[in-house]
Amino acid sequence: MLYTSTRNKNIKVSAAQAIAQGISEEGGLFVPCELPQFTLDKIGTMVDMTYIQRAKTVLKEFLTDFTDEELDYCVNGAYAADKFSSKKIAPVVNVNGNENILELWHGPTCAFKDMALQLLPYLMTVSAKKTADGKTIVILVATSGDTGKAALEGFKDVENTKILVFYPVDGVSPMQKLQMTTQEGENVAVCAINGNFDDAQSSVKSIFTNDEIKAQLAKKNMMFSSANSINWGRLVPQIVYYFSAYADLVEQGKITLGDEINVVVPTGNFGNILAGYYAKKMGLPIKKLVCASNSNNILTDFLKSGEYDKNRQFYTTTSPSMDILISSNLERLLYHMSGEDDTLVVDLMNKLSTDGRYVITEELMHSIQAVFDAGFCDEKSVFDTIHKYEKEYNYLCDTHTAVAVKVYENYVAETGDDIPTVVDSTASPYKFSKSVLCAVNSDDNCTLDEFDTVDELNRVTGADVPAPLKALKNKQVRFTDVCDKENMSEMVFKLLEL
Ligand SMILES: *Cc1c(COP(=O)(O)O)cnc(C)c1O
Image 1 (cartoon, protein in one colour):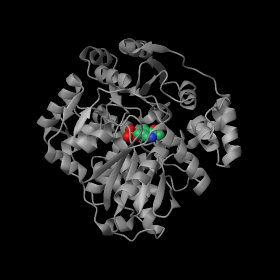
Image 2 (cartoon, helix red, strand yellow):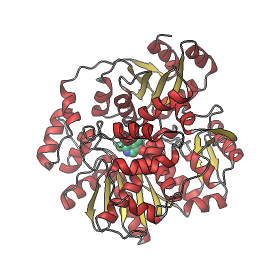
Image 3 (cartoon, helix red, strand yellow):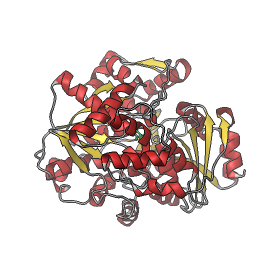
């Protein structure tokens, strides 16, 4: 299986090259040249498998330059039983009727990013051995909160790697901040920036493609790579859990093999939902992918109108991992849906960076709408939804999951389409304890400190507190640097001691 770039179809690289490099030279994103096809029979064989076996079944088709031994090493290491608090790794919980919640947050940092970022360091080091022998890989991360911690935890003390994480100083929850600033490991660094996630992401992208910086790194036998979902190695592990959730629904008798399901995804950078799109294209019976946004509803507008316009107000919400106006992975969708038109993608992405907006043709929009639906949820509805689900179904959602749950309710009300559905749950409620507690108690003046809030939420709801979050209370803060977005490249030099 070979990979090409969304901005230049002539490029052909192996999986290992795509993963080690992170982003294509001309700024495009790597995508598979063709997708493997899974028959219903093959999907049926996954019903009796463990998560690890399901992961190997899917990944084998994409990482054809990895040996069986290498793949075993990667997958067994990533999803080891002591790293996830659920034996199922990504359990499916029936909440109400046809609504099933896929819990993707049982990993070490309590957010769905672990599903990919526990595996990525393994894929990256194996890939680097194949394609960049002896080089130290420098992972640069821009985070809206969860990626940073999950990447730090995945890469900490991994040989021949260093990791630098930038987060918006006022854009993450207190728990997310503490998770990052207390990070252990000899090869890690964390820095806050004065700006929002899009500022951090744009600066990281320009550092990646800056020839002068790359040359400096090369002198030290280092190379950049990315752990953001622009890296193919971040996306491919996410395809697995859509197959896994489907197999679980068959196993639970909620559906019969071959039945269609809908999937609802709380969306930011468009990585998670894009993985669902790939699963559908590979033959998984998914009818609609519903893209759920918070008040930053640029994707809702795009999927309804065909116009992507980031010239709008940016809101800091209680679901910070979705506070994004430039959803990088949309580029991959545009590439596939336009019949692999790399010229069009270059044109649209140029328009986005010069004018902050682009419009797609009606024809392209209709083909996207045949697969995707979209909706958004404001802050009040997030709170009301958390409250309602706790009281009515005894199910505690975090703020991001609540966005998806509410958008799903609206989708069913508007369309009447209530076939069995998987709603992705992307974070533990305890990562956003203050908002969740306020919502549960219908109290908008919660004044407890972070850890007292956790205890109170536990007392009120009885939901288990994840051990890694409990442990933070006694950890030392190691990283206190703050820099302006203009100075990020200098910070990189400083942190790498160049
Ligand atoms: C990253 C994240 C999202 C958004 O996922 P994308 O793949 O960027 O669309 C949603 N919820 C949580 C909790 C996240 O950490």
